[in-house]
Length: 154
Length: 154
Length: 154
Image: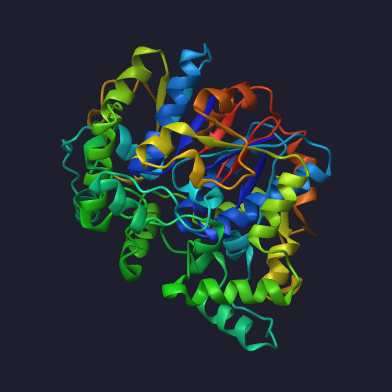
């Protein structure tokens, strides 16, 4: 299975990692390709790199990364809805996004971060969590997807 | 074919059911897996269950369900755009979302509602329209998707 | 490969055409099915058709088409974010969306525009760029998708 993670929203990231973990538990080989806003899901929680140019610094400031900073795609309400959802998940003893990411990595899910997006956003490889093992472009994703049974764009 | 219905927006729901109905008419076996906001598409139009805790009652109030309550993902404009779109569809004698759902069920499209999301949102099986025949997790979806020719995340 | 282009946002369109071009360069046959807001990606930059009825004229005014008019799905900030992203892409010598569309057409990527959406929005075949070679419904897409190895909904 391959999953293109384009979106950087908490709800979509939760759904994606739930699917990835279930698939890995069923013995499927899973590759996740993080691109565009989806890069935020696997960025470190505090931006380390300091882009030199003004536009990228602005972009970094408006678009912080890290699983802990993601918001709901709906009902965010300046953070209240997102905090509420996290509260409900804790109450149900559901794993947090960070825990789901660690579980996926432990199960051998392969994480690729898209180099084209990384360049555009002025990020570097140091900005990503250690679970990201490969940095490559769309061709790397397509090489996996051609052999995949299930390929989803999220 | 399997369709993961993550989004609870009118336009995406219309596209999804158009694809599902066309596929069923061509003789394909179709499974739809409703998760997260997508649950709203197959909820009854008036919430029946009364969650006990405050947070879920708030969530139910802000996130009403039912095909009739869905809004456009774009140009909603406090409901004006959504009503306009429904007007245009009626004028073109296109079936409404509710009619598309009934058609899909009549053609044997299989509806699964995601139990993980249901628990998180404090819903119960009674909150769903009778066309939903199965309540299950991501593994049930993956079991179908592995055998599918076409699998889409919407 | 088949790609359903449902969204009419600049970032998603860029990702889609990057994937399409990479796939075509690898020798894959690619079909793109433009539907709903995705029609805006392959509309001419200035609407030509003048719908007769009031609602469609309103819709055309609020929902202009053409690759040059698309906005980011996030951080648009009344156009500032979108212009910034285009600036960053130029700086990195990345091709613009219009160039990616021409490249895809030159590589033989097949463009289908969804007739159901076209009717609903009161558009005509003259509203589309010449790269769109086919106007058809969901069944045409499914015919291709059934034979596809990779099928994505964007």
